[in-house]
Image (tube, rainbow, N blue to C red; front, side):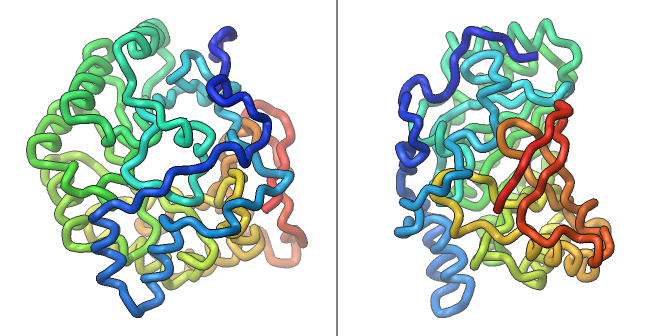
Length: 342
């Protein structure tokens, strides 16, 4: 899969210090509306904490990394990651609509790379054309909806032209941070490049305001399926009933909760990480509060490139067989043993 010779994300900033990758601060207007609507409630702090910097961000733990998922190991072009056999990840942009303080890809987004250009896109298309085992492409970044509508249309149309049946996953925070970006015009175009799934990032019930719900409705009314992902975050959504409310509301909107992620080992994010033992307990309680339709898979991305590990399966082990520490040591997708220490 990966080919040598493309370097990695750190070429533009060769420091080995993870703290060198400082994240910009930007709170989108639509998110400020949500914060103002939550004033005086616990949800206000939950929303602010996600986008407003704090002193603990400057504290980097020894087990943290600027590339916690080890994606640089799997680069086949400077913008394309091929870690899993049947799917690839496209880093369409290094910019975001707003900057989540727990960002796991801050080693890339801190560089604020612009939207993918023609010279960078051509080798991506060539790889997709020649690699028939790839069945899905995750268009992510950063956020692909930081590009102009013209740029996004061009990118998706080119991908579709070389692989007519390839499933496109459009991974974005736009429905929450900038719901206006999902205009009738753009959604109409997205309908025309199916098979395509929208993969929004949603962390709290208070993020589902009227504008956000309307954006989701436009997408669903166009026949585009939606599967969400959520990050488990300390002091934000680490209560089973908060998460159950979120997942049940998403299902009521027509959105399938896909993943609940354990927070990755990105630099300066220790204050967001829920202890692994607590996360397993939360998921077990969610299993009681949610139906099979509204219950996501609880997972962790193993540090250093080990791939996703389904913590949901670990959570079903009898309590007296559970590990007593917050250290997870398991085998990754490549057969190697990886360690996650919360």
